[in-house]
Each structure stands twice: as structure tokens, then as C-alpha cells.
Length: 440
Image 1 (tube, rainbow, N blue to C red):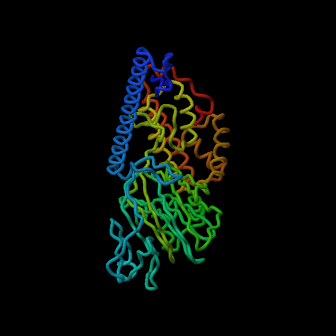
Image 2 (image 1 turned 45 degrees about the vertical axis):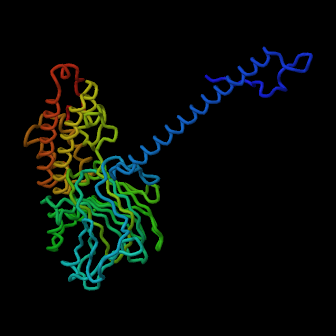
Image 3 (image 1 turned 30 degrees about the horizontal axis):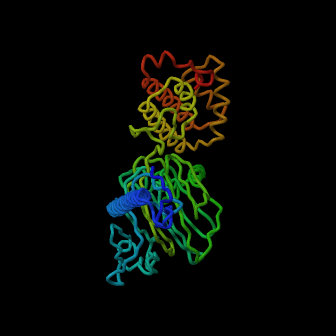
């Protein structure tokens, strides 16, 4: 470390002899001190200059790196967490070459040609996207962009100007044959609130939609459809811009407005394993800006292997799976075993939910079944006799009885497959099932 002292700087600092002249020794000492001071000053300047060179070099390096970052690596806007991969982004800062037909570019398409006779229904102006329904259109405006993901986050700003305005964000899989037009799930923003829909299990499921079009939708089916949608009370003011974030993670779709969580809905269809398209729709009109879509990866707290860490659940388990999990998590499962268990449980959930929806089975129905089943297990009834007695006591339909039986079989197959994931050593250490686990 450099240490600084006050050195003699002028002859006045030198002691003089009687004849008022400095002695030879004093002159020599003063010169020595001056040379030492100059050397210290030279070293200090060298250190300062070297530090300046390092700072300039580091700044240039950081600037060059920032210019070459991929879009998904760029710093996020305040309040966002861009975990995952950026699929596409658009700030709409451009103009069209004409004002007759839709001309968005950058991978966008619309349904104007098919639904509005080719009339223009989108317009770029003032750095925003204005979506408006033409008077001849026979369907809501749909502005589409391809995007492949399972889980995702959509960020955007939007504005509603009139009481009849709305914004729909629809997540689709065009390869899914169980639903109309690939509809998997959707969220609507309206002046009087927000609606979240599981289209795959509900309204757009072909079974229900075909029955509705034929005028044959039963009251039971109407109740089933209603189970797969959620209303969120939230006033959205007109002529005001909102920053919205819509996130799909597992079987849950959640919404935030201006950084505040406003609602979420968990339903099995939302967890559909593949989505390949996002549609932005308007029944009347809406304005959009700063759209960004990220693909998220299921376990934000994942390990280096890319799989969820042990003892971390990422699916909404059925009761039978939760009971088995309580036993299995005590035997030090690997990441791969946890991921496989989650997949088995997710598959079971999808199959059982579909069966229950088709049979009109509600939570109250399941509760009544469980109460009767517990009583019947105390008897000697087995096989067909047990299921027929269950039906008789609960006044269940034939379809509901058969669904209970199929669910029982699916549960047994699930437990067998899940236990097969364990090593012989893990099986030895696995706790024995409790009474409730044995009864299912």
C-alpha cells in the first residue's frame, strides 16, 4: 500500500547554518526527498491510468455483449420475470402499406378473409394494434400467432373503449381432435369482469358443442360445462390502458392486472400437454400493445437434469395419488422417479375427469359414493354385487355406476404402475398403506 507523507518542498523548509546558507548534508537530503516524492507521484499516476483503462475496457465489453444478446436474454421490463424462452414479441411500431386489407406481418394472421369477406379488421397506428369487427363479419375477430408450448406466460397492454368491448386470449392445439377448432382454454377481459374457461373439458368439447348445436344439451351436460369455467369479479375501466399477464402453469391459468393478482382457475384441460397457437379475439373492438409470449418450463425450481426436484409435485393429484405419494416420498425418490410419478398421476386425472364429466358426476356425487362404499366394504359383497348395491343405495344411473367401476380399475392400474417405478430396495422401505389407502 502506498503511504503519503509531507516532504520538504522549498529551501525555506531546510534548516540553515549560521551564515544563512544550507549545509551540504541538508541540500543532499532535500534533493533526496524531492526525488522520492516525484517517484511516489509517478507511481500514483500509473495506478490511476491503469484503473481507467480497465474501466473503459470492461464498459466496451459489456456494451458489445448487450448488443448481441438474444431477445429472451434481454433484461425484462419492470415487474416481470422472464423465466423460460421468449417465443415472440411485438410492439406494433410500424405502418401498413395500404388501408384496404389486413397487413400485420411478423407471423400474424387473421380470420378476416374467411369471416368478414376480406374486409380490413385490424389496423396499425400510433404504435398500437387496433382490432375491430367489420359490420359484415359473422364471427368475432381472431388475430392469430403460432407458438408451441405446454406452459406459458403472455404479457401485453390492452384498452377497452366501449361497454361492448372485450379481449379474448385463446390457447389452442390444432391437432387435438376432442375439441372444436383446437380450443383448449381461454380468458376474457370485459368491462364487468374476467372469465377463465377450460374449453377442452367444457364448452368446446365436441360432445357438448355438438349437443348444443343440435339443441339436445341436457341439464346435466349444462351443469358439467359450467364446472369448467370461472367468473372473476373485476371492474375494467374504459379508455384506460392495463398491463396484463396471463400465465399457464400445469392445470392453472392465472391473471394479473397492473402487477396485482386478480384471479386463477385450476382445471384439467388447461394442463393439455401441447399448445401450438395463440388467438387474440374481439367481439367488438380492442386495442393492444407490447405483446410478449414466453414458453415456461414446468419446474422453475428444476435441477440440472431439467426434471422437477425430488419431493416436488407439479400436478393436481387425485386423492388416490396423494395417498400413494405420502408413502413414496419417504424413500428418497430420484428426480426421474418424481417426474414419472407426476406423469402417471396427470394421465390418471385426465382419464378420470373425462369419465366423470361424461357421466355427470359432481363433487356431491363423489361424496355420496364414498360414504356408501365405506359401508359396503364392511360387508362380504364383491364384484357385480358390490357395484349394483352401490348403485341401488345411491340412486346412481347405470353410466355413473359403470364410471365408478372404471375409475376403481384406473386407480388400481395407476398404483401398480407407480409402485413399479421403485427399486427393490425402495420397495422394502416403503411404508405400508393406511386403512383409507387400502379401501380405494
